[in-house]
Image (cartoon, rainbow, N blue to C red; front, side, top):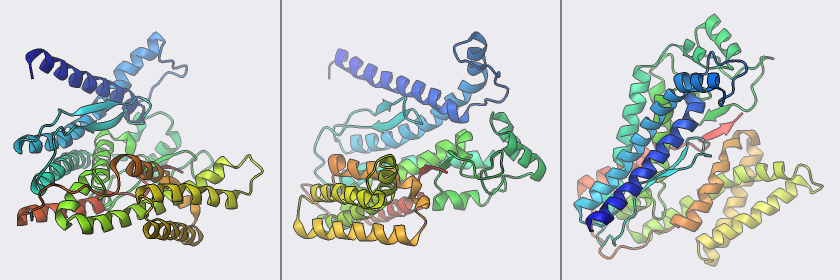
Length: 395
């Protein structure tokens, strides 16, 4: 690569990082920014409002962005240095700004420019990112808990008057969100708990509830880091988890496991899709229950058929399994508990159309060393510890 081209490439990656940092700072400030004392007639574009925003709100967003992008950088450079070590051509990380996202970014990716021919190299590149990123996210999370403020920290945020009255009276958070009438507060954003997060939080008396967690920059960024690690460890296709599990169990076994896991994703997607379709049809004359099931049956058949390349046994057997599982779960449980499952609709689409279900075979398969096998199964355990079936939802 000549000097001019190298400078242009470096400029492009740097520009994307800066834009992503700005985007994550501005959107993150909406969650973690200290808004207490905000003028009653607050307007961002007024001189008073702008000064307040810059002095009190934005800097917390900058801290959040630094933590989140720090995690993403560690994850992606884990892939990058593993690829460089094995002389695999790869790009620097591309950070993706996305201001309309709640966190201001869609993450970061690197581009592998040459074929990975050896399964050991595939494992190293696939596992290095999640392991490095998990360590970074865990350190952020542990620091957040180690420096956890008292519950009256919530006084830094506007619109929490009743909550702060409760905290002042009881010295702790309530068991549920409260509103002016003392009932469950509508439209409260809740982060889904995970096994690892709940284990860590159990050691700290002042750990905030999951519906206020997004006000704590270290806890919020750490939770996102764990969740993004889990998403990357989904054991399908070209995701990190797909690379790792493929090299652990081989092409044929991975093909079966990946297809089975995709059907689980489709079940979760259905639990979110069916109530969503009913809501969208609320103002129509269509029979809600019947129509929503027919629409989901058609969508799921198309996705499963495309994912399994219309292999009859897998397609129709998997389709019936998904519909039956959704029916049993929606009958057995209150459908409202599945309100955060709509994210799995997008992940089903992402798997089918982008990363695919099955991992393409590498040219030279070889057994992994014992150390790599241990790391690989640790990664699969981390997936179970960090995943949440309803990661972000509203009460």
